[in-house]
Each structure stands twice: as C-alpha cells, then as structure tokens.
Length: 289
Image (cartoon, rainbow, N blue to C red; front, top):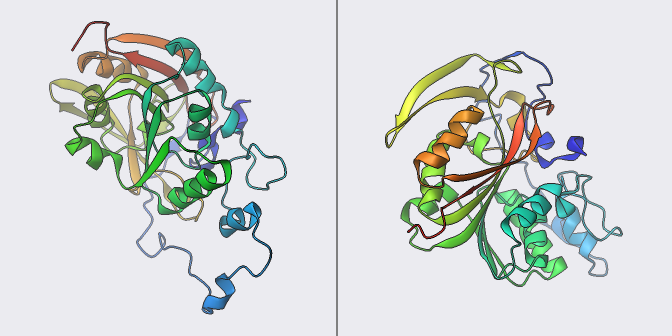
C-alpha cells in the first residue's frame, strides 16, 4: 500500500542513507510546457465526455479516479487509508468545516465531502494541479468544496476565518519555513490532520542544516533541493527550488509549543522510500480558547 502514496510522485527517491545534492534548477529549466502553435489543436471536436477534460493533462495525473471507466493515474488518493485514520480518530468529519492545504487532484477533497464535511476550502498554488481539481469537482459534483488558486501561507497570514479541521497531508516537508505553517495553523483550527516526511539522520543525510527559532521555538531545519524532480509538468512539490525538513520530535514539539498540545500518533512509516514519515493528529485541548 505504501508504494502508492501521492508523494512518490514528487520527491527524489531516498530508500537508504544518502547524501542529497544541492542542485537547484535554473529558471529556464522550470519553464511551463508550451501550448501548440496552432490554437485549433486545443479544440475538442468529439462528443463531450469527462475523459476529454481529464486528457487535457494526459500523462500528468497521479490519482486513480473513483470511476474505473476514467483513465488518469494509478495512486489511490480517492480511497486513502490516511483519511480513514483521521476520520476514525476525530470521530468523523460530519458537519465540520475543513481547510485543506495542497489538494493536488482533489482526491482527499472527494473523500472529505463523502464523509460529510459541511464545507471544504482547498488552497492549491500549483496552477496545473488547481485546474485538475476543478475538473474533478465538475466530474464528481463536489458541491461543498471550494478551490482557491494561490499560496496558503499568504492566505493564513491575513485570514480571519476559523475552521474546525485542517488537512495537511504531504505538504509540511515542502515548506521552506515549516514551523511558520504550524504556528499559523495553530491560530486557525482546532485540529490538524498531518501526514509528513521528517528528517532522521539514521535513514537519510542532507548536506546542510541550520539551527533557527520562530516565535520562541528553537529547532533545526534540514535543507533539501528538488533537483531534477522540479523539471516536469507533473511536479507536485513546493513552489521553490528547495525545501526544509524537520525532525519528528521538532514537529511534535512545535505543535505543542503553539497550542495544539493533544497529540495522537498514527501510522508510522520509518522505511518509506522517500524518507521516514508518520501520521499525526494535533488538537487543541477541550475548552481552550
């Protein structure tokens, strides 16, 4: 099951302890795929079908869609065991307001809606992923989900809206300042459903690290460049050419420092091919402001 995770698509593989090169793609390497020179090539001249919309991004889909007649990717993000674990330990998503970070292709959004979420606000910075989410929304009739195109950190820095739950799956380790995201979420939601990779020197080695502090929380950041992983149209990592990982303990203690002190640890994946990973539910104590 673990070799079918969304994140296999967006990280250089790291099955064993290794040095990761600090290669950073140049702006020319990060270019977007060019459209055909003839705009008429962009027209669909057949009977309107859902597959026509999916094929706009042919070869870029990660997810296997819940309708077996539709051809897209192969990863079971529309039936993800992590979302089922979160639902079990939260007591369900029924009638909850959900903030979703980095929906990718709306597989988790689809699950959240079918699990009864009252509303889902999903924020996606990758423009191609955002458009795929809109395709999924139209094909599967997601009526309680709204997708925004932009940076969720920028959104959280000025947001005044409160949510019951944040779904943060496959996102934290793509941040350049991950503790900032934890701090912002701690002001915005009562529960964070997190799945993330973390740094463990027994499993992987990155070439550089730095000790730092954010709002009184001291921690260490481990630098990782995307390298060749950031060159393809199907790339679904962060918006910079690099990211920073945190250790497992720093992630847990970061949530506690910023007020989400009730921690439930779920699925542990220390041998994940792209680096150790775990599932965590961080909650505000009952009765806390």
